[in-house]
Image 1 (cartoon, rainbow, N blue to C red):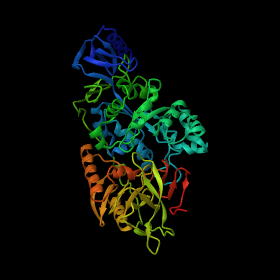
Image 2 (image 1 turned 30 degrees about the vertical axis):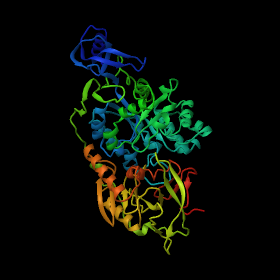
Image 3 (image 1 turned 90 degrees about the vertical axis):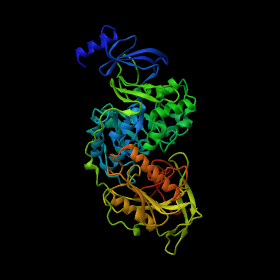
Length: 577
């Protein structure tokens, strides 16, 4: 801002000069006082000049609608929507989202800093303000093979990018608690440049939590119980209440939000697919849920605006007040939270559900061809078990935490698995797909429901190798080969033939296709997976499967190296004792 711009802002605020734009007859939610004020909102350039009795060169009649600050999603992985950043912005801006805190650790696990650069460049083509966190754990643990390794030396350059707020969710909480040397180096990189450190520490408590919080963890979105929420608030962290496509923690935690602690509570999606966006909205949907759960509407709005801005050090955002960035949403009411207009930096960017800016996609060719598998065959799936009592990754309802369930399976004379329709247990395989290592690890998945065919995905958090599940080795082999041939994405197979597929050419994670098409295809495939292959009703077949390889979420997971016991943070045998 130069002197002339500053003078104009002051003159408009003082009423000596007309504003560029005035939004009249609005019910303005003040997130500082908690009051709702009827008046006009004056905008000069990209900033608010004030709320009161103002005149503008352009005047918009709000017709009594509620004006709230632009909504902020405090933690999200764009890649989990399967959409490019440009297309993701097109979907969420008309819902009132103006800023997101994006952690691109999905694509960075596949493509390294090239993946980060792609996301940052693509984000320039959307009206949505995308602030980035630098992925801190690539790979998430030392117990798997990702497409890249981001160490403390690699971090020193990108951590200084203006649009990078800090280190993304530090999933290696064990490394923090044990003061691992390279973990300390990473933390010091953030501290040296005055950047934020985001958290990820499910089920950690007591002195271990103290050790984790002591390094300056800013917030945590992994709370699934009220006790976890309170422990982190008491340690000075922000708590980010999550409501995504896979994880539904907001309903569990809303009762703990009160007048004393609400200003340290935020809202986030983490992972949100287009289908969820079309059906339940984005952050506006979180607000609706908060009110339904008994949280005061203005308190909920604070959680999605000023609280988030303060947490992430977004100076001058999150409020409709003089000098603040002119991001606002006109809402029909404070119960359903249907957005009629979205303004970003003083410009109308969405009206009545329509995204107004032109859509332009950058070239993503550098991130295609990411499925590198050679020498794979069903021989790689053989397990040669000596015992039919096996540990299984047990699907649990309502999240991505899994159990460790002992199941008795049928084996042939060579110790190979034979599917039994009477037992809800199938084989799961992780196939390394980045470096042609040939790594294949097999285990068992229970309570998933599939009773015929197989599924394969190149979406397998966080290293994003191929995850496949099926009733026998022939079906799994067919699914893996099909997903390899299409260059990544999702395939459904039965009797060795592909029933349906969705290619995801950008790193095996994303596509430039419109969100409506992606949502329709996912819904079609979801129906086939449940009705024809038998995946259990109430599960998202693809999101659920994609988290079975994440070795930082209890209890049992599997990587391309083997079956992993997260509670012991070590590999474990498939055969039960």
